[in-house]
Amino acid sequence: MADSFRIIPFRCVGYGCAVGEALRNRMCDDCVDTCYGACGVFMVAHVFFNGLSALMTGKGVVITIVDTCIFEFLASLVIPTFISYNTRRIVRKIVHNVRDTPVPVIKWGPTVAALLALAVSMKPVDGVVDLMLSATIRPLEYI
Image (cartoon, rainbow, N blue to C red; front, side, top):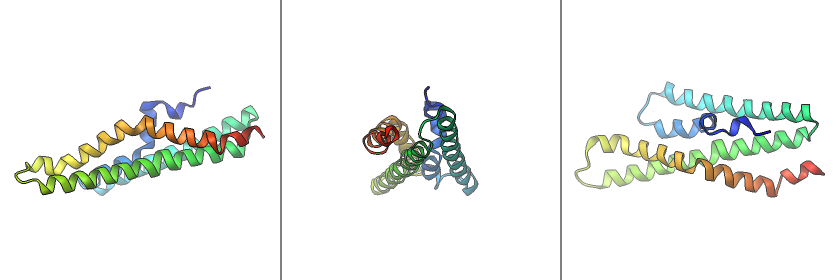
């Protein structure tokens, strides 16, 4: 059975912290906090759902929960937030150092670049984290 939390439109909710980081300088704190909250709820729900599914099928519950926690921590929180923050920071420095840059580009350029970087990196990040977990944690499920 495919993990319903990995379907792309739904998976975007898991990137809430990274989206909040991209929007940090353009939106109010409540909007950023809402993005962080959505990500937190998504991550907890994914761990709970996978743990419950493993319990119902008789698979290794502890390994499944640990696997999902590590996946969510890396693929939803750490790596995308790192990408978002650093893309926004680098683009901001670039647009501030270029003379005669239009004000809308200075204001929205870093945010748009960070959001585009997240959209482009979503599948590769998930793939790399899956590959890492398949080489380390997931084989323990069959012991």
